[in-house]
Length: 473
Image (tube, rainbow, N blue to C red; front, side, top):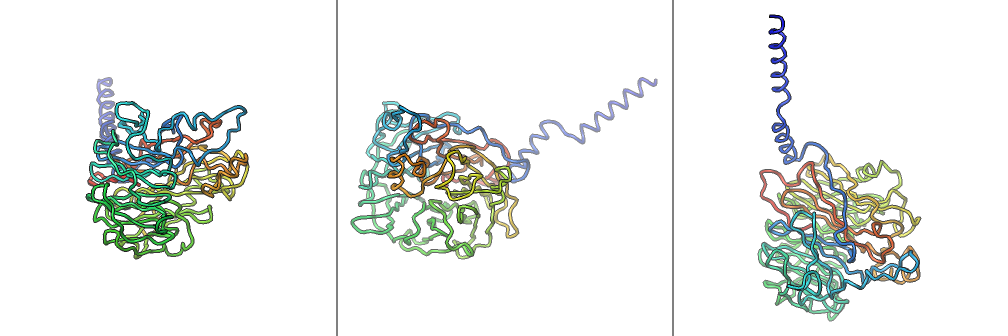
């Protein structure tokens, strides 16, 4: 009888424990619900990898297609060359894969594997089409069509496109810029594609062009002179947002005119090449840096008229780098998902500024600050993550093509292999994808190679009840 009572008592305890603890399926469901709600455990990221260990990868750009594929394109290294420290290394990686265009890779498995896109039927070799160039690629995704631009030695900038999820790029206009330009960008909305660049001739200025088919282009209004960063069209209403040094420029009339807005209290800040990001509620976001020692996230609900959400996230970057006291940061980039869910990423070194000086062994990392509630005036619950560690060592030159002068003289201060920016984007499942430049995996090479890392767990940037699907930035 005593044995029977003991067995019954034990069974009761097991039953109660099951009710309190739940099954593994219950826990998995609860965890998934927390992630979709923007709460739950911290984010996790896969180990960083190289997309390509031969081709150059400075200034990589990334986009998510309507089918969920990932595209990355990068500078072939023509103005990112830095002599190797390895005696006798001739730098064949600089020339052997050259195809007359910026490089382009495609992944259909969230970045687990990548294929370089070349001439149709020729595998990874040769040019993809008419859009020849040697630098400065960019993407924009408009429905099922993906536009891409390249730069042909400042002489012109082509625009080509793909209608088959990035597999082929044979259609295009090889002289879409209609002038001598530098650092061009693309945006698109509902069948219209926009092009902007810094024009040197025949009419200097930061012009904006528009096209309904990518072939025939017409001039629209000019951007303010200090608004040379990337630009984007809101998927909600087509409003155009361009990045400026300390704010944004906005067009609500199809790029015919632009109004500039500065982020209060941050006059003189730098956004470098940062593209504004638009979240699922139509709020516009920017990431800015100041003096290479501070980074802030700023959000506006009314097209830049007011900025009620300005958050200094410098401490989150410090925390990601083991609570470092010394800190140098450069080149912020921001991506947005559902309402108030943003990720600001930046190159950061636990060493004092400036970035173009310092010891040869100073380490640079990619740090992402994620906030699921950035649209709160009291400040978000932001967290910093070192998503890619030790991607570059030494100084970083930020003087553009002038860096090549000191670089060819063997000065470390002329190292421009990283380019001028890197990018992130958010996938269809709400996870963050990051592409950056890596010089440490193959330190003897004279160019950087394209790196990639993806979020594998934690809160989602897309809410469960949202159909918002960002395609860039």
